[in-house]
Image (cartoon, rainbow, N blue to C red; front, side):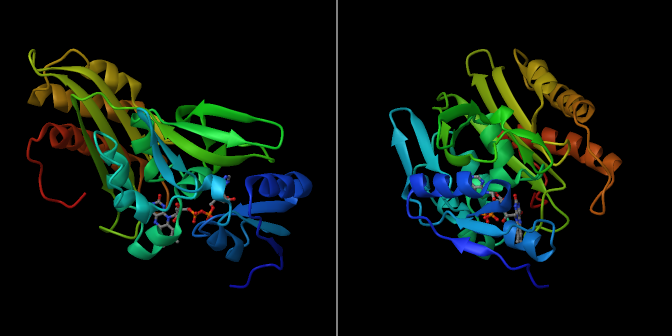
Length: 295
Ligand SMILES: Cc1cc2nc3c(=O)[nH]c(=O)nc-3n(C[C@H](O)[C@H](O)[C@H](O)COP(=O)(O)OP(=O)(O)OC[C@H]3O[C@@H](n4cnc5c(N)ncnc54)[C@H](O)[C@@H]3O)c2cc1C
């Protein structure tokens, strides 16, 4: 499939990129790795007259630990995330999610910023970042604002980003020491497929009482945006995570999600799988063996 003709710009600073975006507005599209945008342009789902390449903008690059939080530039690729020694002490859940995205080729091209700004409900990095309570820095020529990632997504393919804004970076706060996590993704095949359902779990256990102090649960591909399962979280908190409690948590998560039927799976199947995956994710994060299905 051939793309429509477009003008290509390659700014070498954030100021220059923001200036181009302001100048060309709705006629322009930003491109990072291009693994979503190029497909959409070929299918003529988007037909920008101008494409602004972000890959040479240094302000969007790199990862660093600032005190107790981690800064990840929007241009950081999934391959860098899956192998980063900085993703430890609870932050590993993001590495695990990045590892499940696409194929090695896609992970070497695709960026964290692109995955979030494309705003697929099935985006692999989103549930992991939601349970990590990450924040996103959005910049325009006029101002810079930092918002919780939980308020970034507004619908399938939609975010709060304004026409003249760029996602600059993500900040992840420190994760308390008594945490355990799991990221499970169900696709139609084991790799190179979008999630039919994904589940990220971060649990904070009270080792003395054997109860769950705090739970964070996020679901992908089962609502218009990646979502936190707040009812499930509330149910888990303060309880001993025994078999029947874990099973009930799966049922509550099933009731919280609103999947749709599409060519890849029915809403009913997705709901069933939310229950199964939430149960398994809780067990996995607690070190309880789960069936070796590869999810
Ligand atoms: C074969 C294949 C398999 C895939 N498998 C998966 C998968 O398993 N899981 C998954 O989640 N995704 C998957 N994807 C989708 C894609 O690879 C990811 O979403 C990737 O992270 C997109 O990043 P990118 O840098 O390529 O984004 P681009 O394609 O460059 O951009 C995507 C969108 O984000 C906007 N954008 C990019 N960067 C910024 C920024 N900094 N600020 C504002 N807007 C920005 C662009 O304008 C565009 O609208 C797959 C894609 C392919 C082709």
